[in-house]
Image (cartoon, rainbow, N blue to C red; front, side):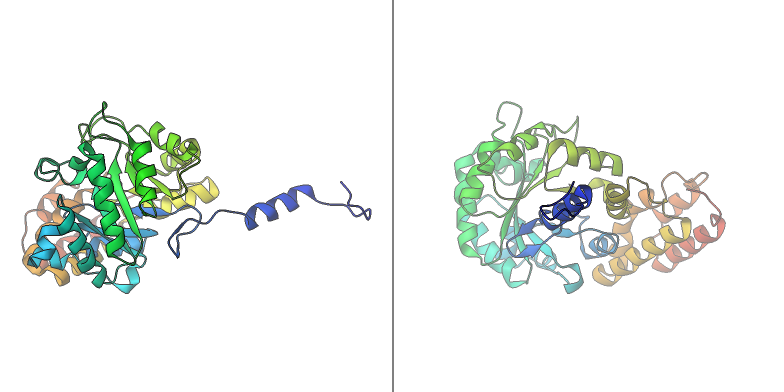
Length: 353
């Protein structure tokens, strides 16, 4: 094709350049998260600073703290206050709070903001009985008016962007997530992450992302919509992005003991090819980094104890590994754990994963 002056135009090249210039960048407030961010889900007793550190270094774009009780914060409970710890290298970082009283949530939001996060997130999705059955977490999905009122008060209480994590509904008969997203946007939230299951499902059955696709087709919705639930491989991440049109993915359980999933997804989306799985040297190095930070942040006894849930995934699929896994999850001594990790790196050095 020629232009008006008779010069040949490379239409394909022009299209590519135009597309690159017009790629949508996902933003929460003034935070630039790139074209398709990967978020680390807030997971109780998992998403602590040591775990976040290894996820950040392996490609997580936005992370959240474990959820923090609003009542614990306003009462200055030590465990709740410790969860406010955030570090500059983690940025952008969000603090997540939960509760069932509007006044307590408003006060807790102000306390959380003082800790210096980039985002304040509200948990409207936790399905466990001790939270949901008290009207917090996913429990508030039974009272949408209260959810909207609570969110409005929190937005007014802080200057940083407020986001929400929630579920489709309480059960299959109460799925109003399109309406919920609209109403929460109207009172000021700047992004929403949706676990595509109901509270009744807990973590069972298949997540139904078709509801997220409907939200993305809703012309009233302007805020980013992040999908969560069942993302456990690069292929599935790419397929769900293309099929459901979400603005990013939130990854939870698949990252436990396998923080490499973030970079693996990014590489596959960019190239259509798989990254090589981490070798044994890399697995031991990251597990040891995680352990060291865990001990530093929690103390030796608790730090060693709470690392146990991660080892199965760090070393999943390795033949004849059971005796080493058993040793890792039964010793309470930090030096012994390091010795076991050293043995693993030596014995399995040639293991092809």
